[in-house]
Length: 329
Image 1: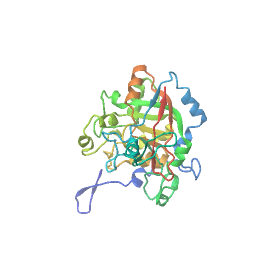
Image 2: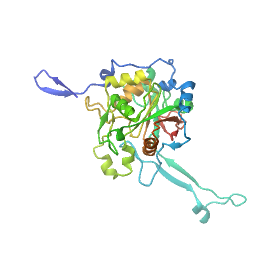
Image 3: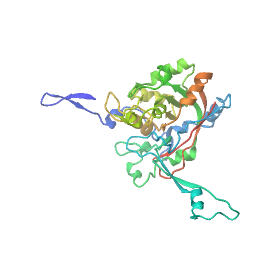
Image 4: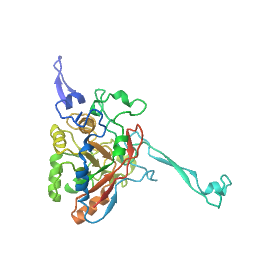
């Protein structure tokens, strides 16, 4: 937060609004036409898909989605409810005479899940967060009323995401099992970690970053995990935004709930990268991703790049949707 000397001579803190904070930074609005709703995923052309396929060397497969409706609870943004699975049909119905077997004697189980669309491993819609009453690509914020008619998760889901992924293990780079509460890093840290891993972050790479934070959720009492909630993560700077723009990063994937440090320590603004990267550049955000097993394997065999594939659920008008990305090394 900055300081301002008021007319009475007293020094008071002020917080810049997002419009002022980001006004000099690049946007990709109109780059792919006035009707575009998938943003920087346009960088993942057929050529980029083949570059991802060329990263497959061993045939190892990793799924990156967390479990849904786990007995110990699910990591979610504070204020959201954890997923709740309910049986609506099982053996008990037949035992109690409340259901008849199918002809031939077949029986079945059925159940349902009640959950936030962003209450698990998920993709954000590009219109999920905005300021100045305007979404990605200049769409009016009023298009979110009653469901997102523009820049929803559906175009991302229908397109799918396939390309070369690269894992940057920031926790391992800093010699930790998990980054600390509120610990930050920048694009220069990412490049330093990549250099230590013996790999280069290239244009159009799906950028996958491990902090250890989601793994920590399963080892920590919930009260402690959520107390004075402040995640580690990328921190805003104009230079970082320009780096994402110059690298043409299509997709940011992390094992945190919001992909960035919760509150920017310099400006005091909450989640500025959601607007600087997702709203303005169209970078797809993928959050709450399980990366510990993949990171262990990459550290063991030295292969940090892979084919990254993902497709969120095709939720019409959704501000996000669950996903279970598949990585092939």
